Image 1 (cartoon, rainbow, N blue to C red):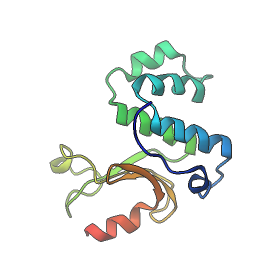
Image 2 (cartoon, one colour):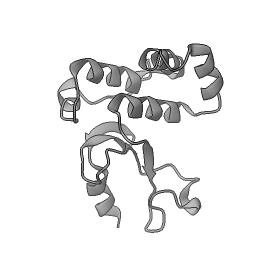
Image 3 (cartoon, rainbow, N blue to C red):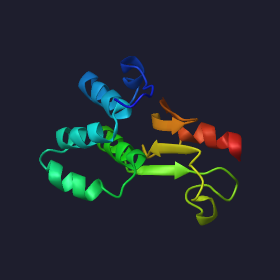
Length: 136
């Protein structure tokens, strides 16, 4: 297991259409190391991908990207997006892409909708709009 904290089941239950089973799986994804993520990928999408294909496909993806992609699939959100620090660095400015993102979030379709996001090094439930306001 990857040594990181994850939101509690109770906190995750605040997300739209969340079930206890999905909340538990989300916690496993957040805490997993790279090998664990590859195993979880086969559980999350067994009908679409087999483990060998996943290993091939994800070999060049960072562990962080793989984790974010799996969380996005579990939540049924609209992809993973990033917010970079700086007024010109919002949402993918090439000048800021070499920096770590200020926020990594699963796009819930609304700036202020509750979603799963990584901010200040930890995964949490919140909205990215409120955080972005602090930096604009």
